[in-house]
Image (cartoon, rainbow, N blue to C red; front, side, top):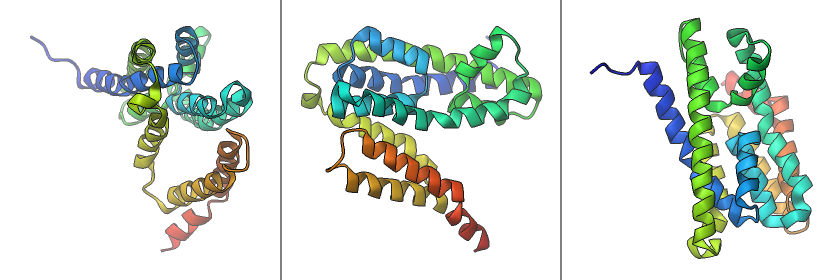
Length: 228
C-alpha cells in the first residue's frame, strides 16, 4: 500500500490537531448563551480560533450588552490574518472567487505550513490542504462541542466557565519566547487586571489589546534585545 505524501500527512495532522480545539469552542459558545446554530454560523464565518474564543469569552462575562466589546476584541485578534494575507498573496496569486476562498482560509496553520515549504508548488499545496483540513475538522468539532455542551448542562459544574481563559493561555504561551512578546503580554495583563473591577465586561480586554499594540508598534523591547 502506497504511503501518503509527507505534505499531505502534515496538512491533515495539523487540521486534526487544530480541529480538536473546536470541541471546546462549541461547548463554551453554548455555555455563553449562543444556541447551536449561532455557534455554527460564527465558526463558519469568523473562522479564526483566537477571535472566536475572544468573542464568546466577552459575551460570557458581559452578556448581550457586551456584544460591541466582543466584536472589537475579536477584531483585534484577527488583524494578524491581514498580515498573513500580505505574505501569501504573491505565493497564491489567486483571482476571482478563489481569492475569497483563500482569504477565508488564511489562518495561522495554513500560513505556517505553506511558508515552511521550499518550492512554490508545495507552498500552494500546503496552504490549500491545511486550510481545507482545518476548516473541515474545526467546524465539525465545533458542532460536536455545541451538541455536547447542551447535553452537559450547567458549565460551572464541569469547569467550562474557566476553559476559555485556559484555551487562550494555551494559544498564547508558545508565542512568549522573546522579550518583546513577554513585555506586551505582561503589560496587557496588568492593564486588564487593574481595569476589570471598575469597567464593564469586555472594555478591559479592548484597552489591554490597545496597550499591547502600542508596545509592539514602538518595538522598544525588541531593540533592546538586538543590542545585547
